[in-house]
Length: 119
Image (cartoon, rainbow, N blue to C red; front, side, top):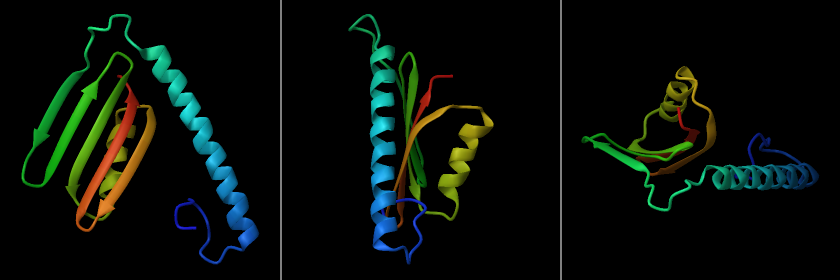
């Protein structure tokens, strides 16, 4: 129940099952869309490598890989209230099309992975 977004804590079993099925279907559609995008964005030359960028300090680490059509961000930081929302807001401010985002929290560590279309 906790893994399905927008599900009320006291939802009935029928609601949980229906929302879970709908959520899985959306995830499968998104996976198919991303696979098609990946196929269409593969470089013609096998030697073409993505450019990489790494930045770190005592509070965060940012890794970026850029291919011809997409950019992949991995941001690790200490957990702070609304941090993931603020980071996504930066992408929105720069009109980046977010294809996928994943947030994981382990104790005091936050890891945010974001895939966008290359600007």
